Structure formats: structure tokens, C-alpha cells
Length: 276
Image 1: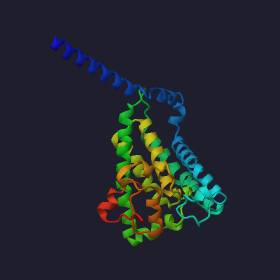
Image 2: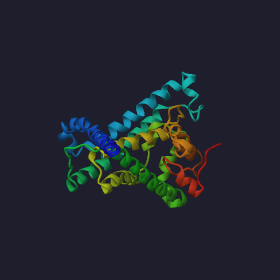
Image 3: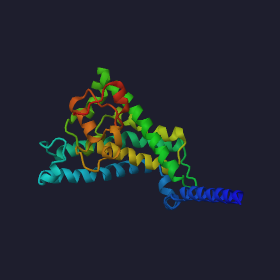
Image 4: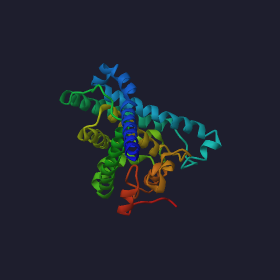
């Protein structure tokens, strides 16, 4: 009798695990099937640039709206990291024009070349949700390390800073559009990091798209100039994630907080500054 009970429990556990595994596999399938319905767009050589610009500008819009409201609404202004600074359309246009220039003149030809050398493969099956989340997290960790190393070198070697990175430090009071205000070398090198990691790991195209969106969101949030109650760093415990204040201090001091997102590399290198 006992053996039958144990056997029945084992079978129930097996069926439950199989059901959870199948659910995990199928959760993203409707989303991916819908995207496959626009496969001609996904296969287009212009898609990466349009996707990058469209997502970036869409993510900037809510923060630009806050910038407009902050001059009239004290409730919004209280969350500004530099409450006395004012947003100007001239600086927004300067940042936007440089972003458009870098994308159209440099990134677009490179993506077309990549399109010919590395044809887009679109599998019929979506990735399991848990695998997608884990791989996006791994890509963020890799990008964070690469950017930290790149960033630290460009601050420690004066020639690199003057020649390439100084452009990004034009603004000490950042707003969302300053996230991509950088020279060609910086834009391309960080773009290579972001694009190479999914390719090297052999990620599903959907996972790759999700990583790009998350990466852009975190970069825009880093530069937004606001410390909002729902900011990402408030959701991550133990101070493991820096957020807007972390990167804001980097633009103010220029000698600390080199990692874009997480804090462990700056902690290990002795370059972490919290402002407390």
C-alpha cells in the first residue's frame, strides 16, 4: 500500500513538472508567432536601425514629459537629482541630432553589411520563458563588465578620454536623451558589445530583442536625471544595482561609478561612490 502511495506521488510530481515545463515552453509562443507574421520586416536590413531608434526614443519620451512638467510642478521637481537645473530644447535637439547622425551614417551601413554576412534565422518555436530571462540577465552581466572595463580605461588613459569619451561628459546634468550623446567610436564600440554577446551565446532572436530593449531602458533610466519611487535600483536589494543616482554621480565627479548598471565591479575596484 505504501509503495503504491509513493509511486502515485512520484507520478503526480512528474506530471506536474512536465506540465510546468510545457507551460514555460508555451508562454511566449503566441508572442513569437505574432512576430513571425511580420517576418519580412524582421528580415529587412533596415529593421535593426529602425528598431533601435524607435525603442530608444519611445523610452525617452516619458522622461522628457517629466522634464517639461518639472518646471511647473513641484511634485515632479522633488524627484530631480539636480532640482535647480532646467531642461532646454536646444540641448535635447543637440543630443537627438547626434544620435540620428551616428545611426544613419555609421550604424546603418554596418547593420547592412552584417545582414549580408549573417543572415537572419527565425525558428518557428519560441524560447522557454525562464531560459529567456536567464539569458537576458547573463547578457546584462557581460555587458556591464565590458562597459566597466571600457569606461575605466577611457577615464584612466587621458588620450582615450580626450579623443573619444569626453563628448559624453558634455552634460553634467543629464536627461534621457544624453544616454546616446557620444562620439562615433563610443557608439560603435558599445554597440559591438551589445550585439556580440547574444551572437556569441547563440540566443533566440526573441531573447535578443528583449535584451536590446532592457539594455536600452536601463541606459535611458541611468541618464534620466530622476530618482523615482519605482526606479530599478529600488527593486534590486542590497545596493547591487546603481541606477540613476549612481550614474548621475559619475557625470558630476567623473572619477567614480564606472559600471553602467551593477555596483560589484566598482566595489571591487574601489571606485564606488554612493553620495551618502
